[in-house]
Every structure is written in C-alpha cells, then in structure tokens.
Image (cartoon, rainbow, N blue to C red; front, side, top):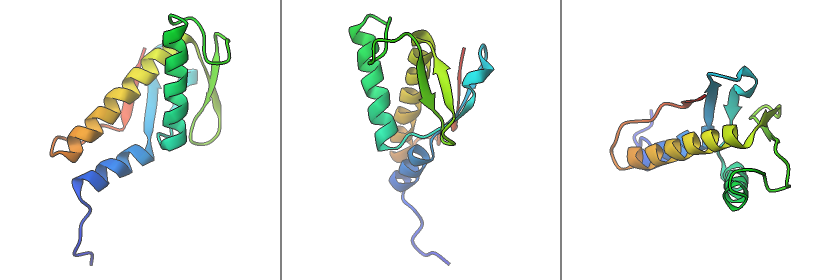
Length: 114
C-alpha cells in the first residue's frame, strides 16, 4: 500500500507526460494519440512561432504541410489552420493541467478540433 499518494502537481505532470488523444471532426486522418513531453512541446512551440512569423501561412521549414508524429510514430499531415487549432487545444489542455495542479478539475485527455 502506498501511504504517499501523488500530489495534484505530480498528477498534473503525469497527465501532460501521457499526452492527449486528438479527434478531428473534419479530417479523421489527424486522429491519434500525441505525446506532450518536453521535446514534442518544444517542437510544437517552434512550429507555432513559425506560423505566427509567417502570418499563418508556412511552417518552420517553409512548407504548407507538416507531418507531425503521434505517440506510435505515425505521421499526420496538418495544414497551417489545422495545426493552429491543434496547438490551441494543446495549450488549453496544458493550462487545464496547471489549474488541476492548483486544485481545479482534472482535464479530459481527449481534445477535439475541426
């Protein structure tokens, strides 16, 4: 028996480490489970920065399609608009994890985009 249950902060960290399951209502090819560890989040932020700097038109490598890996290593082709929605949903999940660590409700690990 474990007399030291995990703190809310530890539980929130585990939720982030486990990642999210994406469901797209308009493009089932994007559906999958995506990691949200340090490197995936760093890459996501870099792509968001590139999209912001290009006014939403291109990714960091200058292309208009991004093959983003899921947890199993399968790549999913995102357009800039789809990746914007994905990044926004992931950001919302991350904020919900922070709020959970402070005593809020646990977030759903399923995110939905158009």
